[in-house]
Length: 127
Image (cartoon, rainbow, N blue to C red; front, side, top):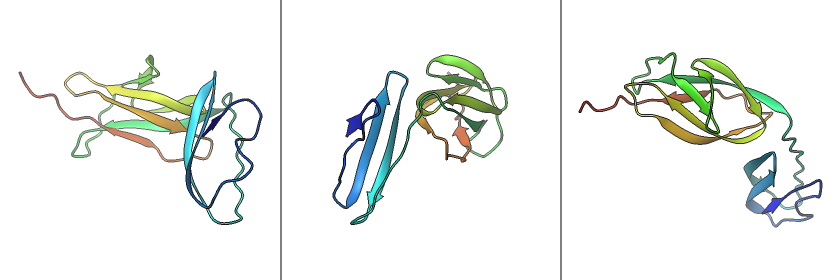
């Protein structure tokens, strides 16, 4: 289900697992929610709110890879390791470093997320 503006998404859902998606011109937010009978779920999504997350890169063996380029939604945002500050919601993250295969993923940046983003870069095969 999806909604925009300030209207409630829906006034009732059956018990079980639901995927909730909120989208606006400023961003997109999605979450899986498990509801029990009679349970209420309320959430305010503020796409103007900025959130922080640590971003690091490492090899498959766990060796840190400093100075890997970090791109957010196609724009260069700096190098690993760093504290990345972005608007709340889903963003396309790309981590790249010469000699390694780049990694792209969609990441949900949320006000209550405290887990650092650790990206594993595999070496490119020699030609």
